[in-house]
Amino acid sequence: MIEKLKKILALIKKEFIITWMDPKSRGIIIALPIVQLILFSYAITMEVKNIDVVVVDQDNSTESRELISRFDLSPQFRNIYRVENMKQMQNKLDNKDANMGLYINNDFSTNIISHTPTDVLIITDGRQTNSAAIVSGYVSQIVSDYSQEIAPTNGVKINVVTRNWYNPNLEYRWFILTVIVAMLAAVITLILTALSIAREREMGTFDQLIVSPLSSVDILAGKTVPPLIIAMALTCVMTFVVKIFFGMPFEGSIVLFLISMFVSLLSLVGVGLYISSICRTQQQAILGVITFMMPAVLLSGFISPIEDMPVFLQYLTLLNPIRFFMVLTRGIFLKGMNFADVSMNLVPLIITATITLALACWSFKKRQN
Image (tube, rainbow, N blue to C red; front, side):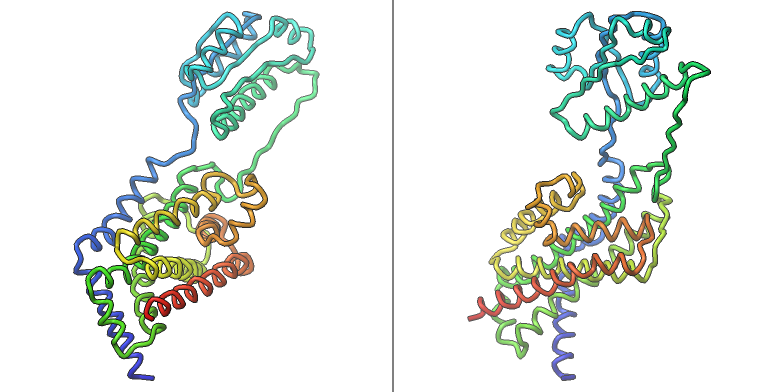
């Protein structure tokens, strides 16, 4: 048993040396994650700003002009285009010269003066569904604030109280940084593991590895540990950068965070090893990682909520380790997830790690024969 452990440790040492001696690998491991972490935190955003509005004001009254001026004063809106009719508004929206349209009817001020409910029409560009929903929210808030200000003193005033849990000021960067930490850790883990066996085949040392006094399980164990340690270290470094450099709070338990990162990265190591075991060159391995990452990110809930996906895709996301990786990273960072909540997300990751590592071992043995 001791001899076997020594052989596995020797293989682990060899993997560390090969990874470190390769200049490209050093760049990927050290520089790339930190640079991307800082760059993406500023570059990636789903906020909607600089909105151009096209307005048809049929009333052209003091009240309607006051409402329109609120859009001029809002930081989210940029240009206000005034047109005469709906046809001109449609042309602006069709040509994407404006992001939304605002139509004010000719009885707008009359209804306000007579204390009669009145309407304004909001038209959004439905070709960009996420932006349309956000823009609609902005406009609704402006109209609601204006309505409350001009409400009669003896009328009923409805106050809307909003509380934002886990991110009180709706700091979008907090959301994106937690996602970036998970994404970069996943990419580094997948690349390092996907290249491990494929590199041996491409360099011609795979046969030497096969004839060594190590079983398939021992070899895969040796290939698993270095990427796992490197990815864990990088995740800790990125977490430190997020906490210190960006001033982002860390509400959860460090122990739970490390356990969650270990299990999450182990499940991705299994995916990477399986990709590596079926690829003969490093180029094929990189393509395999890209092929896996694109649908995995799309089905992770990062771009659109899982609840909004078709039912069969919602079930498919249960096989996606990146989904649970992101939930754990965001939840422990911002929400301070307790042990019960963390455990519910760790179970699918443990199952995924078991299946992928078993598949990698089976594929590796099959290709040995």
